Amino acid sequence: MKHLLTIAGSDCSGGAGIQADLKTFSALGNYGMSVITAITAQNTLGVDAVVEIDKAMVKAQIDAIFKDITVDAVKVGMVSNSEIIQQITSSLLEWKPPVIVIDPVMVSKSGHHLLQPEAKNALIKNLLPIATIVTPNIPEAEVILDRKITTIEAMERAAMDIYRLGPKSVLVKGGHLSGDAVDVFFDGVVITKLSSPRIQKKNTHGTGCTLSSAIASYLASEEDIILAISKAKEYVTKAIDCGLEIGKGVGPLHHFH
Ligand code: PLP
Image (cartoon, rainbow, N blue to C red; front, top):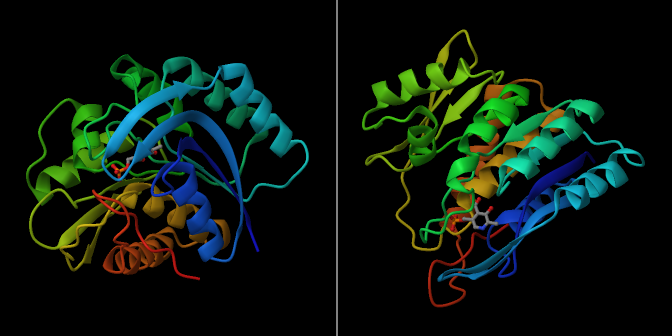
């Protein structure tokens, strides 16, 4: 059993954020821990309110965990603002976990900003360079690079350009293009395309959170990063396929044990 940590925002309705991450860690047989960066009041219809946690409290949570418990992999999700980003970066540089998965969460499916737009540069400058892997979807890759991405070739160029910002590897997720869900992975040497059949399902709340947590889970015990991503994609595909009809909007994924 590996020890996994998510540093992210809370979703009280249990579909995304910290709650999706902890469910994923458990479903994959690991022990989950959480550092909360923001509390959101949200449900399957959207985000009603956000309270950001003070950076000193973010530091205190990270320190409390690392000074006591071995951490095999960290996933970073919603980070809200520049101060929290700088704190997380310096804490992770101090504690040096072996795996850091950065999910550059920016805007929810329902259109709510989960990263203050002015914090984009802090995310690029501070967090991306310490990532083992960064997992933007197409809209996030577009914000990072400040250009449109409409084809798989453009995704490949995006993966290579984001790699130049400092992470050890990049996974650009293609779910927002039409056709099969093709993700593009670049590790500085070769481009690998990972395809999975598109499943048209309504209940997909928390898909991005779940994928990055599953990647962190598999990377904690699997050294082959492409195999870890493939297994994580398989887990997410199954969890979307069995998404739950809970609430009046976009329901959550089903986390199997
Ligand atoms: N809420 C939190 C706290 C999140 O971290 C995220 C995504 O990472 C979301 C909401 C958005 O989830 P979705 O866009 O899948 O609805």
